[in-house]
Image (cartoon, rainbow, N blue to C red; front, side):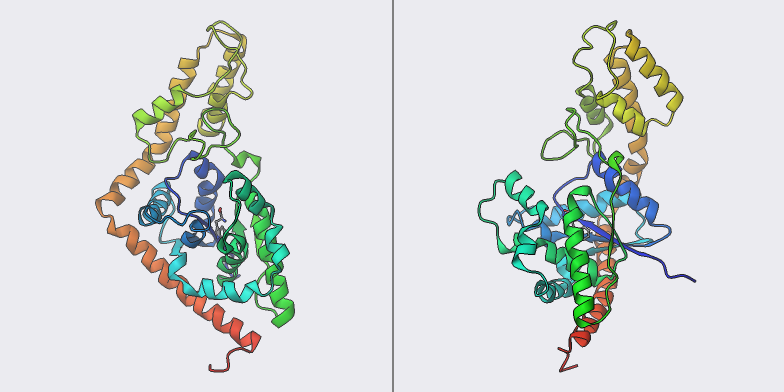
Length: 333
Ligand code: TRP
């Protein structure tokens, strides 16, 4: 039997997941879980690189796992694990940092974006070594494929370079991990029409929003500012309601008719918004049902994360032993 590909990815636990996360990554994880060994990291050390305040960490860790299970990731198929409870990752990070020059780390475009967006004048060492720790996350699991967003491309490049450097310096051992980056359709716009749905922009619909909240948010969605009266011709392009209908409404023929009607004039925003709210609520309904089930027994989340973390530790220990052997630093072994 051919060996199953090991797919590994993760997120910083920073709060509730939204529809943008679903479209951009969760849908893909759900699709991958049947045919691959899927490892899902809760990157809580990475979360500290820009926010040392840990008041919400426990809650955010819980939420990240709960949201993914509610979304349809099966804990029997995917392995969830907690970064700070796999200490081998940090140890491998220190070792790998010797193979990364200071300028390689500081030239990562993603770092520059974070410094600019968060107005950080003096980054911590933790933030500088972010990509090295991420390389350790990936290499400790000997992952073949790493699904990530476009913003993570430079981090993946660095991880690939680290794998190659290790392999040429100490002998072949790491697969050079491949990035799996969603096409542009992987980005969902925000309610306000901005390019990206994001928590910090406050333009999101959470996977855990209740039906009334979803409806209220949809009613505020950006449509066509020139579509003032019902009978005015309206624009479908750049109209967030239609972008969402294209993604979530399974009845493509009806959506096509609605678009035509809207372009001609005579179709009001409220009508298409009501339809979208109903479509989204139907889409979210199975997640609500699973969430309600999971919330009956909150310990389940901890059990899933504990079991996955134990499984990952065995893999991590074996990898680290092999690393030390290859590097000939295993004198006491
Ligand atoms: N940097 C990733 C992000 O912000 C999260 C992450 C940490 C990750 N370690 C990883 C993703 C390893 C994939 C593999 O989205």
